[in-house]
Length: 116
Image (tube, rainbow, N blue to C red):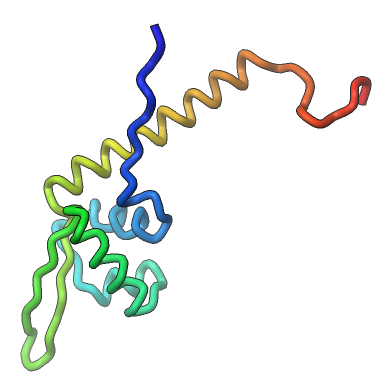
């Protein structure tokens, strides 16, 4: 009986998208500037990333004001939390499968000459 193929989430396969989703998984919501600063992203990179994650249903965006200044808050949606957990589980499954294969096959290193 073989194990099912891991189901990676295409929406968070890019490292920046995964980093934003992972950051948001640790809080109820975060202000745009806090995410930008913590992940060392530019405004435009974070804006594009959040838009893509919002389109994919991973995040919810809330706009408002603090005093006279406009603010944006980002939160991982309930669906985003579920899909992020599935993505991380798939990555763990892939890593475990690779470790299991490595433990089974302790043969020569690919590309090495016999006797080296």
